[in-house]
Length: 326
Ligand code: AHR
Image (cartoon, rainbow, N blue to C red; front, side):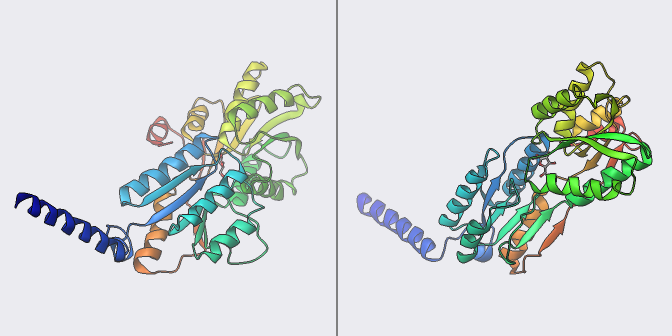
């Protein structure tokens, strides 16, 4: 009798599970209670900024009960394309992509579109020949960041300076746009000239290496300003400047983009001068968009902007440094 009862209970449990499957799964989170599944292809871990962006997206997913399929591409586009294809095969609800470079996405974006899976770009834009291959871009206006950096130089350094530029990853949206925005502003100031420009791939080690080369070049004594497309490269360059016997922040004025804690500390110590903020904490904005699309049936907006500032010795205090999360 006991055996019979156990058999009955087990078969009722199996029946309940199979009913759930036919219903499409009954879990908390999304439409009809189904858990929202998001595939996220991250670029890598090349900078403090990138690590903060990963944490923001992972932590916020966990907080909201969203299932996140995470893939680290180690800065390779081919790995990102593979990851997106695997998300399509796993039929996720939304694909989130931080594209390492701007071009070469057409085919895989068309595949996602054919599978009716919306793609949300975060942090970097892509260049595609037709509309509708992605649904939304959430992130910064990197051209404006370049403009802000140039305006800071004009206001704080003046009209005459040789500028060395550490460019980000070649072909990436922020590298193209931060250069474009900066040049757009300085072109009307003929005394401000970019005399050296080379990629440091957004990493600290390459920022240091390239700055070492700049400081050995025939133009070394004309370098009065360093404009780095991110803080990590600027931090590497500060080491190179010190090792070359110069005083960073004074002999060479340093301005970069991102606004990571380490850079704030350098500005407070007088070893760097300005950082134009690029906000990596976009997890909440991303999931707000995804949840209103999945739970409330709202359309995905084409653009969500992040709010950002400019930081220098006028507004960085120890309190600001201590309160910085990344
Ligand atoms: O795409 C944003 C850029 O990528 C950040 O400026 C940089 O630090 C990161 O690696």
